[in-house]
Image 1: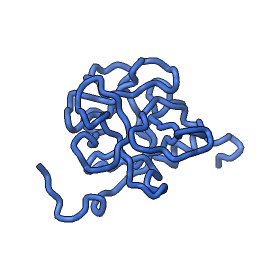
Image 2: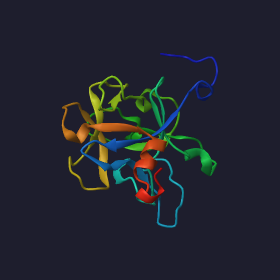
Image 3: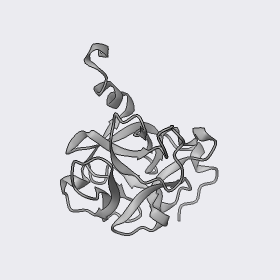
Image 4: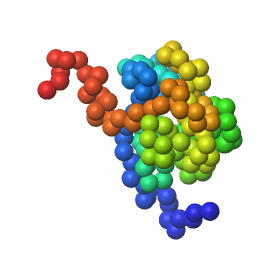
Length: 175
């Protein structure tokens, strides 16, 4: 077990990005707001395949490439702590839905985009990757951990936040 002598948050370096569904880059890993009036997203909110441009969905993430944490961008701006992509109930197992849980640094919250380029691999069980549950282009699909099989449902493209936003800007605003 790794032990840190001072708070882990003090030594993490984040990269702000979106994770595009490679099969259809207009869809990304996202989390819907709790309702249409823009309330904050809380613990246990499901991670889903969402449209990048949906105004009621958070689609930007802070990724720590050193430790593998995927933290919802701006998640602590509501006064709570950071929210990380995690297995539901912290249960590292195949076919377990992925949700946001309070960031603790637990092994179930660690992911790699470099072990298998093009896939987001669990560091708690490297046989599991982030997978679009229904393997379809329909938005709002459940995202879960599933054994690596190389299908389109498991392929993700990490895109830096500025690039992701610029690619979706109207042509008239592009330089």
